Length: 535
View 1 (tube, rainbow, N blue to C red):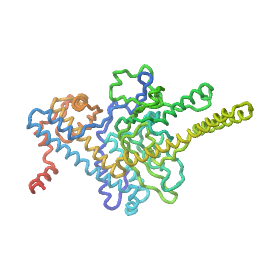
View 2 (cartoon, helix red, strand yellow):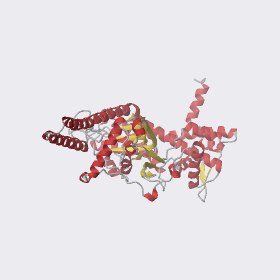
View 3 (cartoon, rainbow, N blue to C red):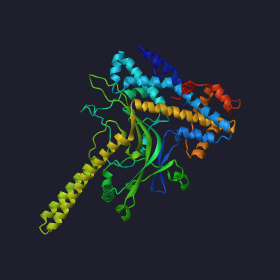
View 4 (cartoon, one colour):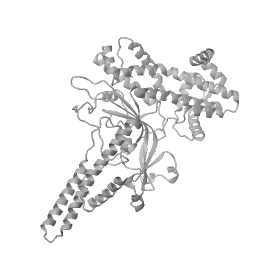
């Protein structure tokens, strides 16, 4: 836990409460022994199909109302159903009460580092630079714990390498602007001290190379499909294959550095047809791998790419020599294709032609000029041959230029889509969304665990974990890496389950469980409203 300095005014009470309560968030958040750190692994299927193997997420995708009603309908006795629904409400009310003060204090902390109004509030508090540094580290510590409880994980170098090993809709090289100069109010460098200090005090495994400037959290996996003619992309693919053939035949490929790629699994580990039916495998369908046929070239095709269902990016802009920047940016995005994840990078450079594009451009111009000059010096050369050579060179140069312009148009469209469709929220809105996510997941985990113990009797922790995952698969068709440790910890705090001497858990009856929790404040308020005449 980061050190905490005393604060003046009313903030002292908020932060003291948060310090004392934050241990509850992290106490039961433990990783299963068999859980891997890497989410995505590149592999092969039938030798020519590119497949990404994904780990199962701990998040429960079933909506809470659907989950509760489905479980209630599995109970045979009507009276027990009513008691079960009452218990579900009381469990949710209690979990919300547990987290209310913690999340309230988190919002108070973020108010100091809001990029829009945070600077004014910091000035009002009259805090020293050291006190502000401690507060921002505390805020990051608490926010990262909430992200962890909401089943977000830091994207590792391996996962990013897998994601960027292919192309989808974005065909331009996008990178973060590393320049320290402030070119304009819309193009600022990124701060390198905030996150570097945090990870120095809170070491993490498998941190990405850019973790000192910005950090990317990801959760959930989806699939994005796009169907179109992709005319320019098909032309690029044909030219790229011809270019590769020329480079290979002339041995020029030995003089150019090869792109680093992600090594697929070994041949003996290649997946079978049965394994591919498992939803933990997602195929990546790219134009670069397309078979050259008249049908494929002349008709619409569908490309497919796995997506990060949710992404959160955290960063800070660099300050100037006269003023230190304190605002912390928190961006929340949805359904970002893995191969296009560069679109979420903060403070991106304006795309331009790559060095390889310039090499092709200049080599074509030089060879074309040499061919045209040689043809002119040969008196017997037909005038139309010279026209053909010059036209070919000009055509290729025009192709490079117009392809780049088409890619720029696609980039602008993706940026627009990013702003209006992909970005869910930012700042305080993102934190509120995370807080609600934590509560929803906690409630679902606790209810499922109690239901299994109620219906199937005593069980060890391992047995309970297995039965909960089987329930989700059989009743809802969903697979997840159920967090049974956290659920059991909450049930024990509620006092409605117990553990015997040989490590088996059992639950109280429904009526007794409702009596143990007791009438909640929310129930009293609802009752008072009804007595007032159903307002």
